[in-house]
Image (cartoon, rainbow, N blue to C red):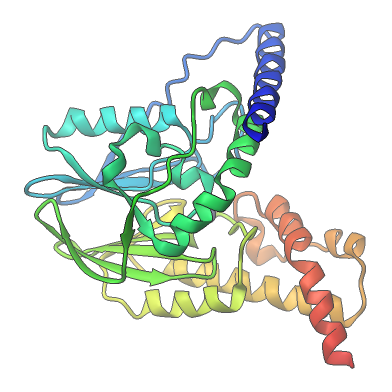
Length: 317
Ligand SMILES: [Zn+2]
C-alpha cells in the first residue's frame, strides 16, 4: 500500500513536470555530460556543480570518483539517479576494460547512493550505520529527489549496499586503500584514502567553497572528524562538493563555517530569539562567497535551532 502511494505520487509528480516542461517548450536529453578528470595516477573525479538539486542539473551536484587498480575499479559514490550511475559506468568503461569490483557509498545522502542500481549488487558496500540509514530513509529521500529533479530520476530505486565496510586497510582491484570511519555530517561518514597516490576522498565531511548541508549533522562530532582528517597524510583532497584541493584549506573553511554556525545557534538560543529572527540573520562577509550559503544557513537554522533552544533551556534551569 505504501509502495502504491509512493508510486502514484511519483507518477503525478512526473506528469506535472512533463506538462510544465512541455509548456516551456524545453526538451532534455538527460545526458549529464560526465567528464572524468584525472587527478592522480589511476584516480578520477567527476566534479558536480555547487548548486542545489534542480530540474536543470538533474542532481549533478556531487563529486563522485573512481580508482583504476591493477585488476579492477573502485567506485566512490554513485550520484543522484539511475541515469547518473549508468552514465558514470559508461564513462569508466571508456577508460578501462577492467571490471568494477567495489562500489563504496560514503554516507546515506541521496546524491551519493541513488546511482547504485547501475552497478552489480554484490559490489555495493558501505559502513554498517550507512547501510541501516539507507534502509530506513532511502524511500523518503527518493520521493523528494523525484520532486526536485524530475524525469532525470526515471526508474531510480533504492539499492541498499550488501557489503559492510569497516575502518582500516582494504585491498580491492589490486589497489591499497585506507578506510577512515568518521561521522558528524551524518551518522556515519566514510573517508577513503588511495594509498599509492595519497588522494583523500573526504566525502561530505568537507565542502570546498560551498556551504555545508546539515540535515543530519552533529556539529561537535563533525568538527572532531575534521581534526582526524587534518591529521592524515594526503597529497590531495576530493571534497564531497566543490573543487579538488591539495592543502587543508577546504577542511579549514568547513571547520570555520561549522564553528560559526554552532556559535550563532547557541547565541540565538541564549538571547531567546525566535525562529523568524534567526532566519533573518545575515551571514558574515567571510562566508558570503560560499555557494548556496543563504539557502543552507536557513535550512540549518530550521534543522538545528529547535535542539539549540532546548539545550539553552536546560542550561538555564
Ligand atoms: Zn551529504
